[in-house]
Length: 265
Ligand code: SF4
Image (cartoon, rainbow, N blue to C red; front, top):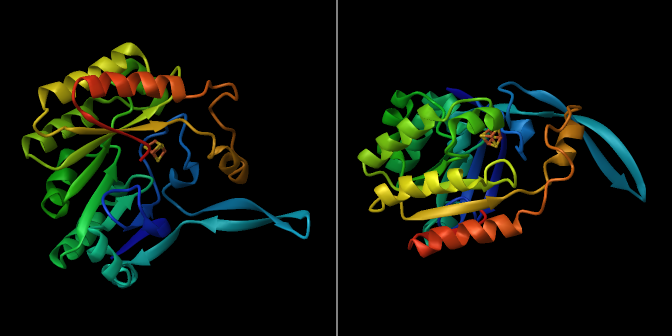
């Protein structure tokens, strides 16, 4: 069994508890305008022009983003850091792109890890069929569940897709009493309207026994060079205001409602 991935990062500390190894799957069903991993979107390998500096001069070279990996080969790599994971209360995070777009592989990987006593987190945009969550839920200790807005019309404009399925899947996970941390990208002028914030707050308030924590992910421009590398145009304008003010405002709203708020993923 093989998956298409584009990176494996060791010693991550922002993708769940403890020290983690994060696997980045290639392919995503959404097209968020602000995506800072545009090289993750296409579900096939693609060329990327990388710029390197050598002795003061810049050189461009082409490399390929995305490669196939076998399940056993991936497990062998992940098990190498088992001691760090166990000592720190960490584990493995499946991220992307969207790890559940290759759900048969992701579920098989999560099962193997989980049965070996390794903590499994799944960082998901939620835009997959319900049966996918049914398949992976028994082997997932934590869902890092992205909500990119409450207003459906704006969500479609921002991501290319409706949020109905995403909200339905979240309801399912809540009903199953899964361990969930919400992740909310704060993109000034795109996701930070009062009705989007209040909508997400209302979901948390209705389910406060399960949804206790939210991570606010401020907009940053680190993905800009990647669009150049992909020879694609960046869908975001240059002049997006700094996200700090918006993040501070949203943080105070959730905190005043007694939720745990973390800035950053
Ligand atoms: S869900 Fe994530 S990876 Fe997919 S387009 Fe949106 S920001 Fe990019």
